Amino acid sequence: MDQVGKTTGYDPSYQSIDYPNGDVPIETGVCSDVIIRGFRKAGVDLQKEIYEDMKGSFAAYPKKWGLSKPDANIDHRRVPNLMTYFSRKGKSLATTSRAEDYVPGDVVTWDLGNGVDHIGVIVNVWSKPTQRYFVVHNIGAGTRMEDVLFSWQITGHYRVF
Image (cartoon, rainbow, N blue to C red; front, side, top):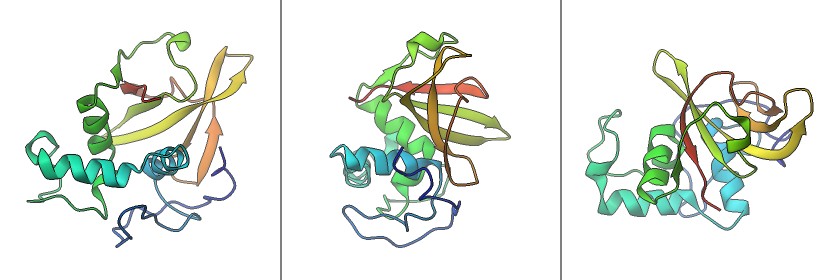
């Protein structure tokens, strides 16, 4: 939630970043950067964790980008890689249409259509009218907190903490 109002842009471009604990400028980023920053604040560096897992199990990860080896600059910023990592670590839960199955801290992925993946995190702000928690995500206009859990087809549900 700290990113709302700070991350005001959306920039999916490839950038060289530090390793470990690398990040693009806080003013920008993509949906996965919301997750990466949130996890880092909780003491988990997904950049390092995913890079290390990919080094040892590269074949287990999607091949959508034509890479022949892991890249610590970008791999953790790709939604399919986050999905693979969370699944490999036993953090995958059922995807349902029941709001009560999704609790604060859960990570959710969606298919926006045309092969576009999206990711966000459930937060502890409650929507009284819809009886569900809000999602923090960046779908193109900066980080937002919105009631969008069932706005798109859910493709993944993960509980890490």
